[in-house]
Length: 445
Image 1: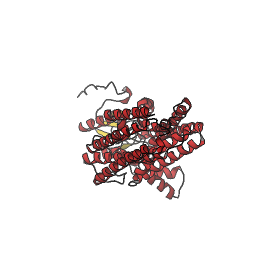
Image 2: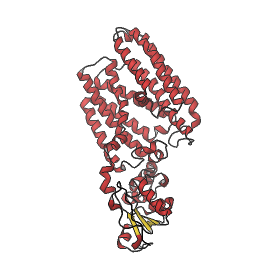
Image 3: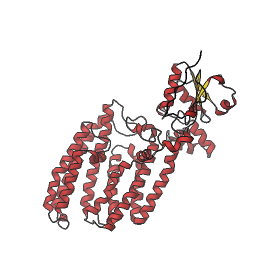
């Protein structure tokens, strides 16, 4: 019987199809079905375990590494598959067609993927080209070929890079301007140094975000929201991220040297702490909270060092309490989201959903401590040289109480995103409160 004419999707390149569909569908695994590189998936399926096996293997070299990667434990259920290709395959399967994957390396993983998806098996590219040892008739196949090399540059758009580099997170790095503002050093030279410090921290942080996402690939793909990150979703090739990390860190080093060696030392401490956080500290209960608070405060320290102003101990203590509270709110939001979604305890964090109440109490206590420290500062003699009307600073207390209370309430209502600092920039009432605080500080000078 005559086959119906094929209807092509205008968004799908024409070279995908090499023959009319009849009884067998042949799909290239890499670049066709998989929106990632199988080698990189094997490497980052469990980086720590891979390094341990490589170190204990006793056979250094690429052959040993290849053997270890071939035996890596990959979660086939959460790999970034091309939804269009997968839907076509499942539709063909429903019509009774046979489906085979084409894979030239890591045959074990290819067979595992085929078995997980209910496909019929795997064939080698050489066998397919020669037409030998094939479990199907070559005269009745449709093939979805590798598109990755041809369309890689189109897939990785500027928007994808901005998402992967967490450009929206650069709002946190504005903390380097805090010492300039609080010390009233509002001049062109100071602002220029603070701006360069901002760029250095942004590049350093972006490289750290990419590294963190690589190490967290498996956990992110099982997360309700983090699975949409560029690397987890397969929007950004893992190899591209590996190339970008050293480039970003090199820029940060050059920018740091342009400011001062001491600033570069602070930036290096930030990077080392960030790497330690990504590798181990974020999995330690409460250690991750203290580390996050320290990383935020370190931005303020870097701003003071970069501009050359003396950092007030009042500002340092106030910042530690503020950022400890925000870090606790961040953990509360993540756990409450998992509770609402009916998910189990996070596998990459040493917290349980049952910890919500104590985390909320600690967040509230830390916030109130921050307000208390600020009140003591306003009562001290340290404000007299800086403000002509220091009594106006008392007006900041009710605004601080309001903002912290609102953040805690929004987190309790499950209306707080993962990051409370970004929430402060996006939430209308929070922006009004922050703007009012700035106006009061300017009026008090």
